[in-house]
Amino acid sequence: MVLDNDRYVLSGGIDPLELVEQFGCPLYVYDSAIIKRQYKRMSDAMNVKRLRLNYACKALSNINILKLFRSMGAGLDTVSVQEVSLGIRAGFDPQDIIFTPNCVSLEEIAEAVEYGVKINIDNTSILEQFGQAFPDVPVCIRINPHIMAGANVKTSVGHIDSKFGISFHQMPLVHRIVEATGLKVEGVHMHTGSDILDPEVFLSGAEILLNIAREFPDLDYVDFGSGFKVAYKIGDVETNIEELGARISERFNRFCTEYGRDLMLMFEPGKFMVSEAGYFFAQVNVIKQTTSTVFAGIDSGLNHFIRPMFYNAYHKMTNVSRPKGKARFYTVVGYICETDTFGINRQMTELQEGDIICMHNAGAYCFSMASNYNSRYRPAEVMVHEGKAYLIRERENMEDLMRRQVDAGIFEPTSTEA
Image 1 (cartoon, helix red, strand yellow):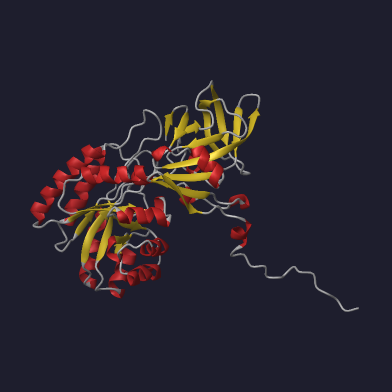
Image 2 (cartoon, rainbow, N blue to C red; image 1 turned 30 degrees about the vertical axis):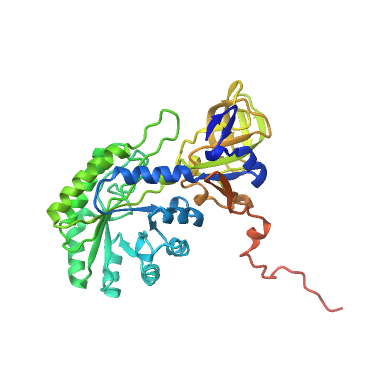
């Protein structure tokens, strides 16, 4: 979203205020041009013979987003059998989907096997059970490299005390299970978590994974996960994907030469692909002055946009209604009966009740984490694509809230005989 002749516009010159007027507020909007840019940027950064970027659909799972990635040649990274089903409905070939669950039952994994997708297992208990139940189904093994990516333990999943992955110190046990069950290991995988800035940290984890890959003679792919950081505010740092791509490509190509054939290099970017493409628009309900704070209360809350409260995440805010004017500081809060603070002392052009605020970087882990808390409706979603706006999810209503509830008639008044 850029400022053009005293108004903010999305790609194709689309005015977000017109979208709010057409589709209502609050509103999620995704710009496909930015998604395409990010996909091409990462693809171009990797100089290997076989590359597959599996979009991590937990970031944003609207089927139209999935179809966009399929059209660009991406695969799909899924973490639940429901996401697998969404991928199939979006038209993905099952072998272009990898299923990487955590702490699920063997029964759920068996459902994924029925779909014919790639299976990635991250604990030795399920690996042993899987090997006995499905000895002829190739498997990928998720390794925990004990690498701390970023400073937030909630988004770093490769540290030593993480529930994700099999510790690389447990490889003797993994080999015993593989030998005993006759499993074919077709891939090895790691994911260190979000907000990777230092290529050295990522490459040190990659080196651990490549050393493990040497132990399996029949691999088809090596999956390095993702977790690349994007900028959330002006002057923010981000992963230099071009530098990282050059370095990991050189190392991977050298490994393939040593291994004796060209394996496929896989990544599973989610946030990197969709975060900057998303915008969340909300209306100012009230300006409330207290003894020390000016609050801007909006028509949304943690039910729609929980990242600031859950991760202490920063999202840039813009007063779309008044691009120019005197700047003031506001603490932006929601309408949920909880402390749902979006940002403290945020500087914006002076707000009035009825103005529209935009929260940037709303494409990843925003709508996908939305709920109906306080019996509020989830908002609509719109995709801006090649100069047109398309509704890709309707706004919920009361019928949606009641859809799966059953009035059991327990407390209905009963008639009595005279």
